[in-house]
Length: 280
View 1 (cartoon, rainbow, N blue to C red):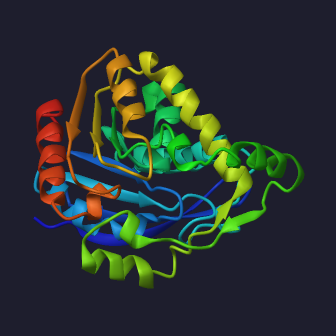
View 2: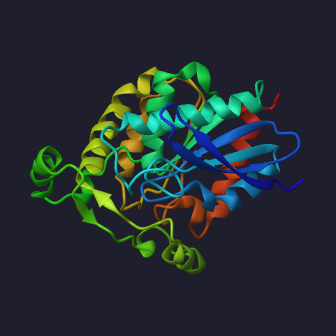
View 3: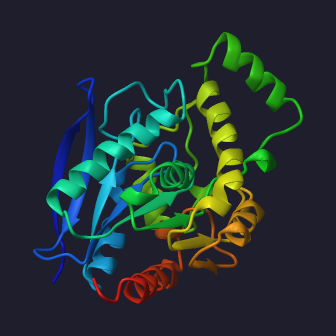
């Protein structure tokens, strides 16, 4: 049965509003909480939802603060842990609706760093983790002068806007997906100095906590990714102490869930879910 779609507005302790897109079946084996990447939003993952519904799973697509239809100026945070607060609100809402179903975090790019930090801090609240093109290192994108410049801006002008552009061609070869990204009003490409510095710090922390994550983990990468350094995800995978699986998709670009050849990615996700939670 195909999942139905609905939206939620979740409210935080300070009254902040977070937007969530939900794809759910009448009876679900579990919920994937999708944590999107920078400048991304949770409303564009309908194809993932359609695919995982075939093995009984639903999807909640979360718009992090400063992204999509959630509160806050675009791409503006003071500290990375603010994103973890957003995830906590969503996890609580899922647990209220589905008290006895597994919750698996699906983090794409920057969202994978958010997901890893959340799992490291709250392993008892979730059942597993899927990292899609995880952003555990972006030093390959920085020329020699960028780190010191970012450090100065982080101190003096933390919310200085470095860019407002988003290049769909850099993340997918799929022409239809490129058109969708280019016309999506919720993907404006805003990049701020503080967010980049916080992401760099979080990426390093993710590599340091890998050996503490004992949850089942599925890592999905492209060895030819040019947005993030995929060797960092390889190192993360090697340090995981528990049930760890990695799948590689040579030749694919960064946005694996919206890239040509994504059928193989969806298949691997569904197989992993069915194997790990065969009892759900």
